[in-house]
Each structure stands twice: as structure tokens, then as C-alpha cells.
Length: 129
Image (cartoon, rainbow, N blue to C red; front, side, top):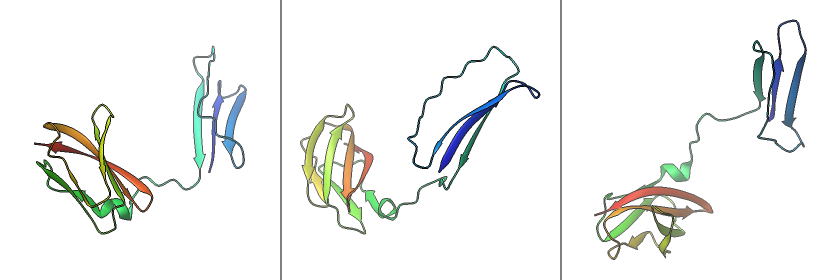
């Protein structure tokens, strides 16, 4: 992928560009200032960038039932390697190496389930009721 930003002060004036790509490190910041009110800026990105990601592992994974009471089962077409539960504040609470996790001791509220499937990590929120 190659990306660059370019600009022109006016149609018949100077122009410039700043680019990245290939073996060059990406610079995600660019400070621009110009005293010319008619300046125009252009961004060009060349490469293959998907507009959405369809992940087979994600499509075959669900938390059900949600809200859950005592047990949070994870349903997947693939083997679940690990489940971790986090509070909404990001505190780690517990983990399980099976396809379900006991949540009976958690207070009612919203939590996040982090699920590992084939070295990929997915996070979904769930309600404990």
C-alpha cells in the first residue's frame, strides 16, 4: 500500500506532497499550516484495503443466551481455546479453557467476554442478570 497527501496553494501556485509506503515507515501525523485561504489538500491511498472484514472465526462464534445468569456458554464451529471475562472498567475477573464459563458469582451488569479461537482474539459484551 502507498499513501500520500498533497496540496496546492492555488491553481497556478506551488504544490507539495508527503508520502509513505513500500519499505518506508508510516507516519500517521502531518502538521499542515498555510497562510493561503484557497489552499486545497488531497489524500491518495493506493492498495487493497477491504471496506469490511468478514472473518470465518467471528461468523461462527456467539454468546447465547445474552443476558446470561449462571453460565455463559460460547457457541462456535471451531474449538475455543480460552475465555476471559473483564469488567467494563477493564479489570480481569476470571478465565476458562472450555466453551463455557461460570458467571454465577458476578454482580448483575455488563461485562466483556474475550474469546480466543485459533490464536485470534474476539471481544463481545454481555449482560449478567
